[in-house]
Image: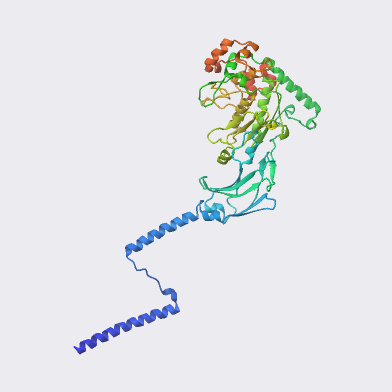
Length: 476
């Protein structure tokens, strides 16, 4: 028994001796090379796999957040400084915005007074979206406010906006505000102008020395000859008067009574100016309107000016962006152009004859239609459902950019020099030798008035479309 115990003890001592030697070896290796030691987590295989899966999802989430356009830390780390004159913004991003998944960066500028009183439309230009490079980390940006109301004490917001690769807004924040006492970089807006579009006589205060007196005088007599063609226009028609007694307020809606005496008929010297995102094609469309009105309303003196001081019918060309619709003019999904009647409560010479807004987010052809349509309102035309009218509210009609026969029939009556005032359908009928009963019949069925088909207007329509010149009008 003693021998067996001694044998067991000897075996135990030998085995632990080997373990001790191995442990001493491990300890020696650690002291000379610590990297060989690894930490082992004591867990079941199931626990280990669950932990690995959770960590993987978290890592993926953190990675997605860190590279997201909405990553708050990125925007928190954006810094900026202003120049001493407050007209230069130095903007620093923690890295290039494009590397953060930000496809577009905007600097929005808009006044504190969001919904303005529609007096002249110049305040529309104070709301701007300025694109900032998404591929530069450090940027120098010139900032300015454009408009015509800087004598008022006002506050403007300067807001930074980020958009993702799908052009959706992912972040916005007001960086700073400025008021008229601290911000001095205001830009006075002036009408757009291009040479060789308007006739010199239609260009207010045209520099005669640019073409010489003889050429200017010749142009003057050409314009007078154009006005003399009024005598060859078709006679006033009952259908035209009936349409002047109607209007629509909704697309494809029903006709509503709208007495002729409420029409906005222009008188005197009208000076038009086009502001904002104007193109040469817009000026050409306006010139076409002016030439047409020389014939239809020879007593109406319409001209163009590139000086705001003389403009009394301003036309503003600005895009209906989300910011513009929210801060300046509620237009999104509602309108692509508007005419505003002159204000009776404010002495604003710049909008003596009202003002117009045109949405520039459209093709040149559609812009021309919008411009002719809105100028038609300024001249006194309302909406109708005539298929070929530029004033139509018929959704299936083409968007034409000239006055059609039904439009010209109405303008012919509105600006007849035998009508110093407009009182009623009966008064106009008597003055123009029209059949009053026939006018009433057309009023009951406006579709017949649209299809009256008065002859004699084709030449003037072709003239507007550039198919013939003035020498070919009414048979040459």
